[in-house]
Amino acid sequence: MLMIPLCDVTAQFDELCEDITSAIEAVARGGRYILGPNVKAFESEIAEFTGCAHAAGVGSGTDALHLALRAIGIGPGDEVITSPFTFIATTEAILMVGATPVFTDIDPRTFNIDASQIEAKITPQTKAILPVHIYGQPCDMDTIMALAGKHNLHVVEDCAQAIGAKWKGKPVGSFGDAGCFSFFPSKNLGAVGDGGMVTSNSAEVYERVEMLRRHGGRVKYHHEEPGLNSRLDELQAAILRVKFGRLNDWNQQRYTNACRYNELLGLQSGITCPAEISADGYAVATSPDVPSTDLTTVYHQFTVQVDNRDQIQQSLTQAGVGSAVYYPVPLHLQKVHQNLGYSAGSFPVAEQACTSCLSLPMFPHMTDEQIQTSATALIEAVNAAAEGTSRVVRNNAA
Ligand SMILES: *Cc1c(COP(=O)(O)O)cnc(C)c1O
Image (cartoon, rainbow, N blue to C red; front, side, top):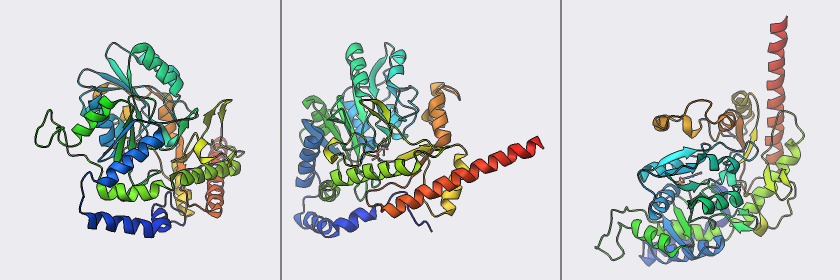
């Protein structure tokens, strides 16, 4: 059994057990189970939180991406530029609307799309850029929005891992035509099941998502186009509203945990800690006193890079420390995308990240002792793997 899990979602429930239980009971007794008052109130809360005029609750983060792309009119023949280092849902949504994903390699220090390489991928077919704020860190939205303006492109942000993150003081999800959020249980704001949200400053985008999520009609039983059944569940919305009250504190706790990891791991050779882009360039997080409202990165994951990753992960498991590989295979090398014509070597930085990335235990309720145990186990595993390698080299030389 693992002593320290990668993520502990029930700790959030334990903290708020009474309030969540009564919220569930109130929905059950109230009898308004679909698109009721909790969905509406939660949509306003998220709109305000992200600084957007509108928000529409949908069935999942994947549906949020799919419906946002459809709402802005992306379809067959269109190209959408995105990162190969993300969860499959990002490109699944592009395929679902009939468009073609076009990948751009990532920045090795932040794991986010390398904005400086995007312009070279733009063709007359390009209709949108889909930045993914991976692991909770915002992409370089200055460069992305400038490119979108210059080439007249739409921007849809994948904010599934980044609720509460800000690029230069502005919340993710408020830059592009639409922001897409996920409330999958392990996300920074997690439901007790699936859920998602589309944020937008465009009334047109909002209204179209709102219509598509309930069978493509503005008026009941009058359908304008094929939609789907993808509504944020009222029960999930009620639970999410209770948890939302704690989101800023929880995100700050994640940030504090990241600072602590950096302190314990930063000077170790063989371990690269995740960098943030700051006003002064790249830096690792070190000041745990940043107010929760000023957080840039919200550390959905704390992901280091190491050589001999698989062996190190095995040692961590043996030591009772949870870890995960997000992601073992870049999207351009997935079977589902083989017809796009990419091959090994197409995006060397993303491929390297897939071989070396390792996410450590990260959740708001971690104790300092758990962080220390995880960090120590990693250092020992890295040292043991390095010794093993040098032994092999010595034996070969002998
Ligand atoms: C989780 C996730 C999604 C999909 O969200 P679901 O709610 O699971 O459908 C999309 N993109 C990224 C980057 C994610 O991490």
